[in-house]
Amino acid sequence: MKKQQSGFTLIELIMVIVILGILAAFALPRFADLGGDARRSTVQAVEGSMKSAAAIAHSAFLTAGNSPASVDMEGATIALVNGYPDAESIAAAAGITGGTTAAATGDFIITSTATATTVQAKGAADETKCQVVYTEAVAGAAPGIVATLTDC
Image (cartoon, rainbow, N blue to C red; front, side):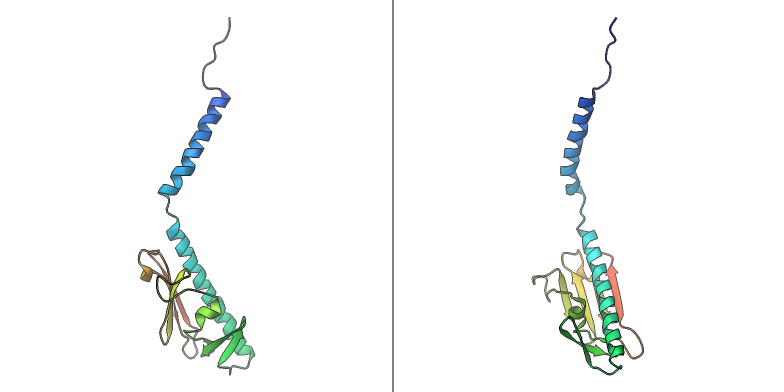
């Protein structure tokens, strides 16, 4: 007597796996919005760039004898306040580009006041909750660099 085959053949199983893989490849991007994670990571990178640029500018200030009003970084003149970049120079020192409005080119909205610079990620649900704020250094202290990442 011959044995009767029961179950699926290997080819049938492979075809089912391939079809499920194709369906998953098309369905996953529709359900997963990774834009918020990307904006959050970008703002964290801006925060790190600002911290690094402030540290590099401060080390250049110290090696120049604690007296210069500005230092040169990557061909740009960076104005200093208490040995750290001032609010208007930090974006150039950190290599951050953007505009002052959401319609401007670049990934960021950069606004500066007399003592602070705010870098906001474009496209966030609430741009004030997806930003980095750089506050100029006061005498004897490092600048304040605070990131808000609650609603990217």
